[in-house]
Image (tube, rainbow, N blue to C red; front, side, top):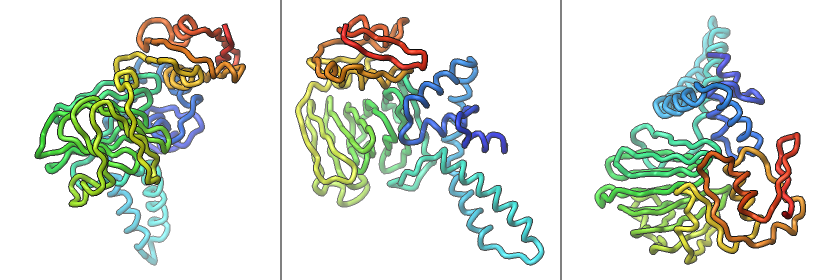
Length: 332
């Protein structure tokens, strides 16, 4: 037990639990992603262990609050003859709570109900899930959501990355996705939500959604809510008042859910940034001017050949792989 707790704070995680904690942190960089993929490839059983750790995360989430309560009671406890015993117990409780803080993200739930479940996709992997109500979710690479269904609403939180939702209609039990500091409220529809740092985007493919600052169960949920129509996107930043609406080709923008990336007259710098979420090595434009070159291309995310090789074959670039694991991109 103590070895696993210590492993959570090691520079390079060695267990499935430690990797789950590392990959759920904000600001996971390319080095972490490459190391995680290397760990998965070391042993065929590592993926099974990682999936089991995700399942444990969902089932053990309620214990985090219990540990904090125990720690608080230990802090108030005074004993003239058991000081050393209380100190040891308090230290153990502190270690367990510290582990819980690392594993369970600091989310502020809209509703107290059943323990939430977590769905996670690894770097470079796109995952499909079916929720308990039959709604379907596709997670983009290195993305995660928290799901907590209650009698009055189906609540989801986009923790990081991007997710496509195909929601089963139920007017009596609306579906809500928390994205940054907004709530996307629907009864049944198809849409995509993305969260990259503090920048958020919601794109509607079919049906109707409203974007609110309040939980769906609150009486003020409809106050100043912004409605989207199919083909429309809303872009906003956490903590900022402004919400920008724009028309765009949603099917192209969300092509990743069909395991392909579509670019139409896009700067090469944008292509490199997008592809970077699906490859296991950092990519650098040797000549920054090359990033302004505009390209139109479709890059398949599935197949036997590595994505970086397919990119080199379909774009006007040449890629040099360095001994330290980088990809230097030059003009062809």
